[in-house]
Image (cartoon, rainbow, N blue to C red; front, top):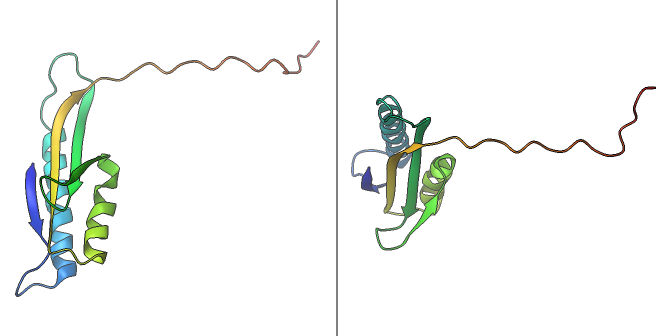
Length: 107
C-alpha cells in the first residue's frame, strides 16, 4: 500500500476521517497477514514509511503507524504519505543468557 491520505473533507469531520484511515490501514494489514506464506517463511513482516509526502518520508515500525496518524491530526496536516509493504519474515534464535556466577548453591 502506497497512498497519500487526505485529512480534510468538506462534509466529514476530521476525527471521522482519521478513524476511516486507521480502519483502512488495519484492514490492509489483516488482509496481507491472511495470505498464504511462501515456503520457508515464518510470518509476514512489514516495511513501513511515513511522511508529509513521497520525497520526505522516514522508515517507521508497524506499531508506530497509529501514533503517526495521531501526530498528523494534532499538527493539522492536510495530508500525509503512508507506505506499507509486506514481506516474508524469518524468526531468529534467541541467545541463551549465561547463568550468573554469584548464584547460591544448595549443598
